[in-house]
Image (tube, rainbow, N blue to C red):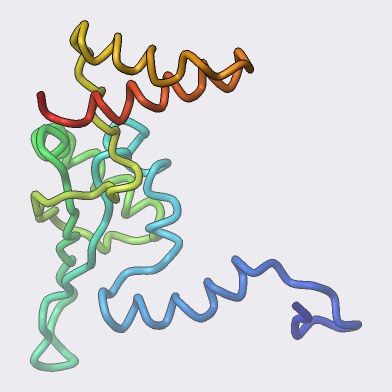
Length: 166
């Protein structure tokens, strides 16, 4: 895609998406896309894999003369990551404030909810096949001449039968 740079130099799509998404995220969630993208560096790989920043809740100011009050960072967590995040809340707040460049965050609010998408979740292992199922599967694919194809179809059949309840 051609950008607004001189001579029509191409611009990475991620830069264009950031320009589009940043104002939307700031308006809706009070959060920048840079914070979301840098979450693994801020929270660390152990916490980042089971959490993500949701939004920043800024306190209402009734008048312009009201003193500045830090905001609340809302973080979605899964299971035990909430306990780890609660334990490391002070360090995470300091890292977020260092990332933002000023003391914007005063505390963290933790929401327990699924963070990973269904695609990223590990699938359960299929159950072991009974002897009757194994013999029926071997009989079904036994007439195939190509060894590689026969082995692939046997694995496929074992996976399909293993997902069904006995």
